[in-house]
Image 1: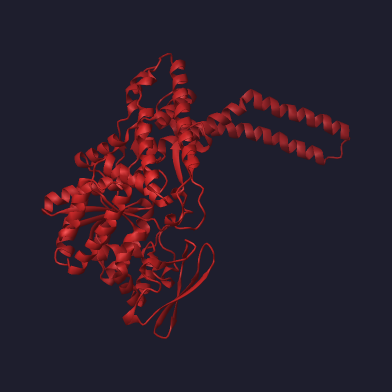
Image 2 (image 1 turned 180 degrees about the horizontal axis):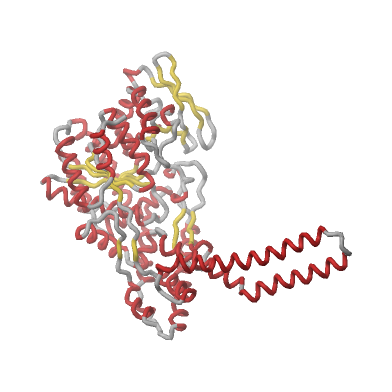
Length: 563
């Protein structure tokens, strides 16, 4: 169990209401933990990392002058190191890109305060499995579609590392473009119909949505041309937006390459495996989290073992004399592995360091301590295991700096949001979205009343079928009852009620979802999105509040609401 002071420090490291609070925590962590701990090994690790960073940017063709300068800062000596990471998701949602923006703004603030060079690093977790939903799908809002969502999908083999899967075919790329263009066309047509209904012709030709989409798709085509594997295609899209479109000096590298520099850190954990296992087990009870590590994690080696088929094996630990033996089977091809690590004072990775990759809990232990990370920008989904990783790190005396999450809901009026608003208005008679729940409940009650009347008659029909009455009379009575059901449906406009209810549910989805970056690119503009996120952090800095963005469609708001 941690002490009260440790508990207080722990909560402070994961709870930041504002950018100012985060900056103060980073400055405090630097003075208390990093200023005197920078060693030759850390400097060597950073120099080694810079080689893989350069390789990524050369492959992606995003080795800008700003990136070159940041690489030099990383190589030349002590500097502040900020980190974030994410899977190479298909046309990732805004939160993935927002990590880079927060990291960049934080780096500028810390550089001015501490008078130190600062670098921002973005690790591409390209050894994660392909079966994660967000790795292979991207969502766009669409009130007319089932569940209010248009989903773009990549057909990927299950349980493979994303870096071991080929990029999509040109036909798949063309299909994605066609789906997006069809979505755009239908949204514009829907809005045009609404404007005619409102008796106010909106000049939709003034919108830049199609031009914005072409700018985005140029990035997609460039990333596609430079990549060979699926993970690179998505990572290159990310880097070209962050480094080229937004002009930041964020440094990218693939985990599949840069983790090779951490053999010493991996072996150090293995050498202290009993201690590691003890604190991992405590973490699952002390820091119980809904989406944290499993309760069996303490029985598993702190890394994945790579299979020749392109998947990975989870190794359970057994002890044979002084040796640690990992046993497990590949999750894809089921090949069995038995890997021995011995003796404890002379540990080596069988097959080489490129045969392993960190698990979710060991990644921060390895990276944070090996590179002396001053701050990590995480995501909502990773907060739980990061809390547990911090528990292990602190008990083992490993470096673990502040962790921040910035996931506001971006509020803007795009094509789909506008269509959802007019749909809501046509059903409710108002644009006051605060009444949505009330309208939905009213529709549900009406639907339930009709369904109850229909079900009552259905029960009568069942009883009639079971009766011993004359068959001809039963048939006649059944016809009468069925006619009553039809009459109830018609009088209540039941199909219309059901459609209205479905549309209201879809409106809620559209207005509250976190869509793919495509929706931002089309409606706000890629460059403008980065600028507005940056400006918000610099001027407001609230990490918990929703964020209002200016979109191309804003000019029509007053026109529509005045109708």
